[in-house]
Image (cartoon, rainbow, N blue to C red; front, side, top):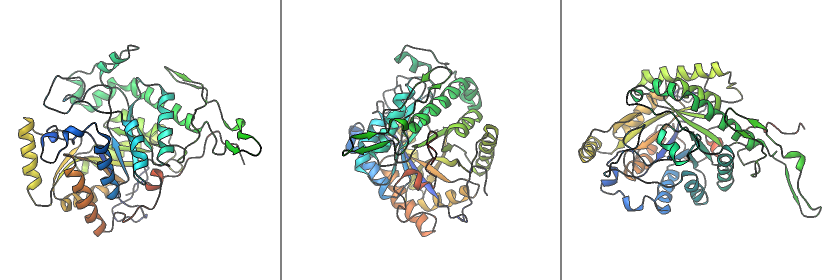
Length: 415
């Protein structure tokens, strides 16, 4: 199946490989993961802990890793803080973490999450551009709106909608309440993209003999005016190896699908079965058509999120999940589909879902490092045996891994 997003079926008839990414978060995506044998709860703020995880992901030839971030402490509730003390609380800045890991890795993409509701677009743009330079073209960016009104209190400049318990029962209700913030988020991404383009590729001359370091005619003011902010430009950071770092968004409903169609290079969706995958991909395609995006020049990659607990022995992952649920005092819940089983069974599921039109998957390891190594040392070899996953990196940039073109700068001088 080939949709407007550019996905292909599981046979790889168009030469497209299956893509895999991993979402890294704390001790893992299960709330009790930090209590599991082999976890490293005392090291969650240590750079070496994250370096070990990303090195393992790179050994598994994964396309990229994502790093979660937020403006408030983690919470069991999506929309409000809590006072729980039995779950992981506290984290490090995702962009700074990714920048630290950039010189420690060589091929894997690094995609931090940042908040776009309370953070200046100029600072966001130069931070991600710097990461692309530091990683030599492996930076991505997941812009995230602020879904908690409590976040605004850290800044004191504005208020944002307070979601209710009724709101969070339906993704469409959430999207409706937050529609204005998504529109503002799209403007933030547009401003960042213009800043990334504000230096032409050959603006830097660096000719010591003539004393010319810069061609000032190739550095441009962007003069962007949004609903709530304006940005004069230019950026202080020259154009990056990828031209524009990869923009990734997570989408659960119609408004976020529209945000992805307007602003993203890759959208993460959260279906819970094959029929849901087909239905959501159709909604994404409709959002692409509605926004007028030209997918020939700007293809939109689609990944599905899955929370996974993996063990080689049949039944072992289910027993581990039950033990974790008991420790947490509740069954594991997630916005994404949850898979518990063996790497071979997961490979079957991924290939079936891929035939619905997906380009790849972002896997959320239930526990770290256990489920990450099960992905890299169990799932990846199984997919390689089936001939659907790379045996070596074929590109040095994140856009290259995903077979996405390097954009031409919008201010580039003709000729």
